[in-house]
Amino acid sequence: MRLVILDRDGVINHDSDQYIKSPKEWAPIDGSLEAIARLCRADYRVMVVTNQSGVSRGLFTVDTLNKIHVHMLERIHQKGGEIDAIFFCPHGPDDGCDCRKPKPAMLLDLAERLKINLSAVPAVGDSLRDLQAARSVNALPVLVRTGNGSLTQSGLRDSDLADTAVYDDLAAFVDSLLSGELDERMRNLLQHPESRKT
Image (tube, rainbow, N blue to C red):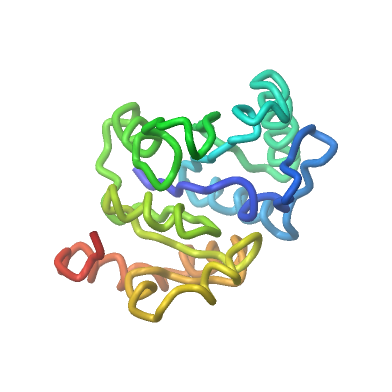
């Protein structure tokens, strides 16, 4: 099974310091929907794994979140793409859950449901917690510079990014993946797991 895992805010759609609280506030990043469609045409399954603490903060309900996701899926379908599943954590940073990234529970749940090993599966995000969650399950951390990505990159040492692929946006990542550019990196990580950060 060929699989790509995506964070939502800052990767697929524009993020907001005020949170995305309704379908009308959801706006795709240029090229992201087309990139997802290209993955689907290349027989990749696409999953979304996202923290949504706005639920815990009382900014929107799970019902509203579902409506936002229906809107997102409709927009992706219009471009010929599909999201196989959306995993979300509704908790806040102080709720003590196991699912909020950088904790791995959502990714482990995904792996269990699909009955697969996530080793070297690309997991694309724009924040340090996305990278940390990916590493915790031996997925391949991918950082995009959209959303908080540029700020995240500037705050990390080169050594912190040694096992991370960095791209301008989701479209650039998909270009690299579909061209085979990532193959060598993924093979190296599989052959030399000691080089991975823990």
